[in-house]
Length: 233
Image (cartoon, rainbow, N blue to C red; front, side, top):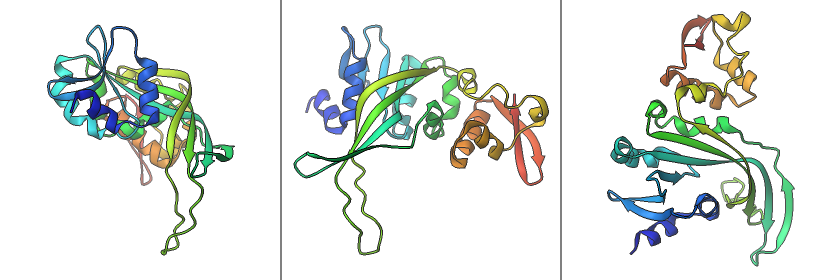
């Protein structure tokens, strides 16, 4: 099987659309480099990997290739999305706008796999803020256990709204509001305060704090009661 065939078997509609959007004349798609299939190899030699899921599967590629190659991880985030239900024939049954809005901060959900690698001079992470359609089958009722059956569906790209480039720990730290850690909070802030300042779920705030501490952007500032404190390094 060709390298192109291997890649095509694995990619979904969003992955394929982003790859087509990023490709420019001179790029080569689905190329084997030192035994690994790379989504795009730029004319200038940069290796581009489009990752719509977790980053942990990239670990072996990065270990093998990063020291000798410039690499870019492109991570699409649904900043705006519609949930579209279709029937078995592909006809649209309903469409509604999702209240969930992604942001560049969502990348920390993935960077927990290797946060300190963002300091590597050969690595760039590019977050694409996208308008997407999430296409799903109709609700399928409940299973015998009583759980609602839910079709995860497919993510389909509508438009790229913006992009954020993260090429250093400092670039990651710049995603935090400047006011955080200033004034009365200069003595430190809790993860719960971080979540409130960023408007994110607690679990994401915990991952942001973990990553930024691994990158040495945040440091330990003691405790307030039982809660650990962070401050800008």
